[in-house]
Image 1 (cartoon, rainbow, N blue to C red):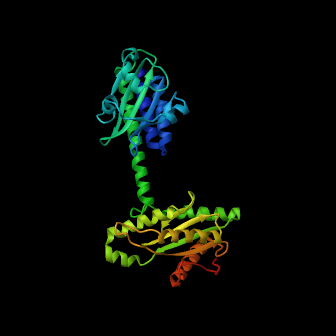
Image 2: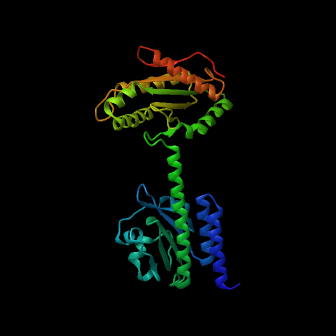
Image 3: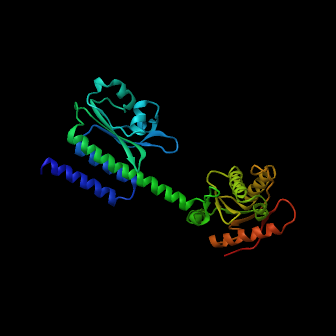
Length: 337
């Protein structure tokens, strides 16, 4: 087999990996393995631009230690890196001895003789860069450079698809108005928590919170203020929860709060803390006072099934709305199957 046939075979295999492998991490790993085998490079790294922080971080690598990769976090604070990331200019280092200032900005963990740094982009979006180096002088020229550039394009496609996929998942899971998860997207997770509680013989509580006179607030102050109130309500609630508790939007102005391993008495205390926070706070730029009703239901006190627990907490909320005195919290004694 000729050298050209080997290269075409490697590229074809890389394309197959992109089309057949679903997990982005596995795609990147396989692409790097094919790249280093094809080009016999010393070091290879996919350095990704974090879209939230705009720091460069190593996503996948070859011949770099785990510690180095975890600690690598580089700001785009030099004209060289700026040209690489924002202007998409490839950087070639034929001989590191004569490019010390360039090496200083791009150096990875180990010394090298020559290197090639290719920007990763897709749909005019900067994604990071592909770094490869070698102990051979002037290694990344001609065909070697072309092969690395082809792999950079494939890696760019993987990163871009991964970002699109994550954005799509986020859109499907999150409620845009409040920043919480939607109940339907949260349902499998809640059921898993419930069945775990059954297996572990632990209590599991739901709180169902309804904002008092939310319709009247909307009619008086408008949709924008109403949405602000919802977001601030979620923020206040989260301050009273543990990191493994969950809040999801259950209705227009209702929020379901999941409290794993929490019995009825402790669930009532959480509900009281939430209402106390409401009483001590104002909401939106209008500094409005907002009240709430909370129903409390607990497994195994009120239900023997997940659906039963949902029925129980809904009925507990209705009971809370019938109460005239503060706090507007209610539990029920009924048992649901």
